[in-house]
Structure formats: C-alpha cells, structure tokens
Image 1 (cartoon, rainbow, N blue to C red):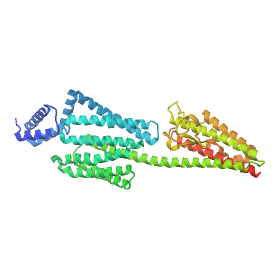
Image 2 (image 1 turned 120 degrees about the vertical axis):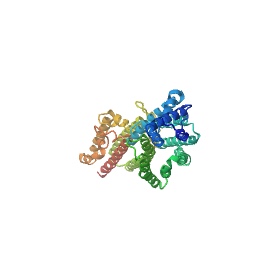
Image 3 (image 1 turned 90 degrees about the horizontal axis):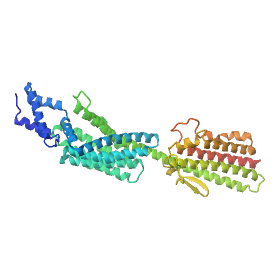
Image 4 (image 1 turned 135 degrees about the vertical axis):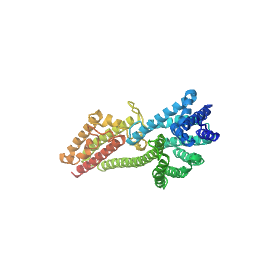
Length: 478
C-alpha cells in the first residue's frame, strides 16, 4: 500500500492547522484521519495530488471546522449555551427588525417596541455570544482583533440606527463611532488577513476592490446620516462597485466550477442586505420626519389662522354692538362658539386616546394647552400621530361622538337658516357638513389617523368661521 512522504504529511498538517482546529487532541486525530483517506485513494491508483484533492472535496471547505464545532458543542457546556444563544438571538432579532421595518413603513402601532427588542437581541445577546463562540472556535490571536473590532462596529452601528430611527440624542455620535470603527479597525484588519493568505493570491484584487467599495458606501451612509452633501454620490458609487463589480467578480472566481449554490454565497447576499436595509430605513425615516415636520408646521399655521379669524369675528361684533342687528349677530356668534367648543372637546378626546394606553386615555396630555382661553394642540409633540384607534372610537359613523357631532352641525345649520334663509344655507352646505371631511362607513385603516383627522377637524372649524363671517355680514346688509 502506498505511503505518504514526510513532505506530504507536513502539507496536510499545514492545511489542517490553517483551519484553526484548536480543540485538544482533535488536530492530530484529524490529520491522521485525512492521511489514512489519502493513502486509501492512492492505493486505488491515484497520485498524492489527485488523492488529496479528492479527499478535500469530500470533506468540504468547512468539514473539519464543523467536526470541531460539533465536538465542542457536545463536551463544552458554556460553548453550547453561547451557541444556542447566538442562534436564537440572531433569528429572533432579525425577525423583529424585519417586522419593525414593515410596521414603520406602514405606520402600524408596535413598530417601536419591535425595533427596540430586535436591536437589543442583536446588539447585546447576538454580538456578545458570537464573540465568545468565535474565540472558542479559533483561539487565534491573529483573528482576535478582527472579532473585537467587528463586535465594536456592530454594537455601535445597531445602537446608532436604533437611536436615529427613534430620534433619540447621541445617534450621530454612535453612527460616527461605528463608521470610524469599521473603516479604521475592522475592514483594514479583515483585508490584511485576506492579503496575507497565500492561497488566495488571485483574489487579492477582488478584496481590495471590495474594501474600497465598502469604504465609499460607508462614507456615503455617514454623509446621508449627517445630512451632508455628496451623500447620494458616495452611496451610489459604493453600491455600483459592490453589486456590479465586486460581487459578480468574487462569485465567478470562487464558484465558477460549482454546480450547487454555496451557503457562503447566501451569507454574502444576506450581509449585503444587512448593509442596505438600515440605510433604506434611515433614509425613509429621515424623509418621513422632514415631511411630518413640514406638515406640522402647516397645522400650526392653520391653528394660528383660526385664532386670528376668531379674534376678527369678535372685533366685528364689538363694532356693531349698538346696531339693531346686534341681537341676531350675538346669537349666531354664541351658536358658533358652542360648535367650535364641541369640536375642541372632540380634538382633546382624540389626543387623550392617542397618548394614553389601550382602554386608558391620558388624563392631562402635555400636547394640549390653554392660551388666552383658547385650546392649542402641540402637533409636533404627538408621540403616535398615525394611530387610528381614536378614529375608530370617536369618528366612524355610528359612534356616539360622531352622532353628536352630526346633530350639533344640523342644529347650527338650522340656527343660521333662521337668519339667512334656506338658499344661503345650500351655498354653504359643503362647509357645514362633517361627513365631507371625516371617515365614511368603511374607512381604510391607513386613510384616517390621529393627525389626518385633527387636520379635518381644524378645516371644519375654519369652515364654520367662514360661514359665520358671511352670515354676520348678510345680517348687517339687511
């Protein structure tokens, strides 16, 4: 039977040692096992090179590592617990973040809770357990720096994304630390480990290209996060280099002769998605925040216009206090104030339900103030502006409050018709009809929310004041 030379055994030992087999006695056993397999293939007529290649193909790229991992899992209790923790936290955290992203985009309730839990599982449990598992499997000081820098980058990146989406302070500092840690520590260490690998000489240009691509993309992500110029240019160039140049090139070089899809390729795709998804969510969240802020500014402006119109109507009444028509004007103004107050109470109920817990409205929400006897809502301070629970409870046709609102509007139209006539009322019907702006019988879940219905109610109040203004002038003319 053919026997291996000392040179052949040294080559096998060197190759197996490079796979970081650190468990006691396992290294020698694996070397002996591989040598026996190679000698068996050589006995079938192959030379050493062909026999060794056949054995390596049979074992697979991670076969020996998997043997060590299974051995550690069986005999090391701490490793087993950390491995299970890593798997659970990775799956649960990713699922929670996925649902959080969908809920955030669709403005469903519960997105913030899922986002916080998902980030906690990934940043605290997954990253820490992964660090312990990787160290247990390698015990290599050469890769320890890579593991630690990856841990620091991952934790600060996940935490920074969470703080940014939730609009918490220090988000910019955390993302800056993550970008610097990834760019200065993790990526250079990873690139260096790949460049010194003599078996991957042909792939060195790919690794350098990928490193440059990631640096450009991270720079663009950082610029976008900080709202600096050229963010779009950097992210687009980085993505083009990653997806159009680096990924196809690396795939072709690595698996051009493979017949099946490698799990490593799937992992690479998921890693790229992990880079892209946070940027997409943060970008969408920033756009949404910018839109919300501008919308809230408009709401504040409408509220100011409303206060101004109320002041103008009161001044108009004072101007005609001594006229013969003042009695009629005063009664119209009294009905108008009653209707406005009814709408104000409805607005306050909406805010209390939105800012409270399910079944427990907030008693004195900070979003409602009284200024000079007028109710003022601080729209920017609404914590859940897209909640539709108050709409379902108060404004859907058939609810008690909606019926009361319709009755109050009907009475107001009747009171105005006494002084202005039916023809005038028909002209102003669109301004004095709550159903024109509020939900119908079967509203879509996304069509009406706290902020949209507060907007509808403030438009209704403007319509009431416009109607009152013209009604008062009609009375003065006659």
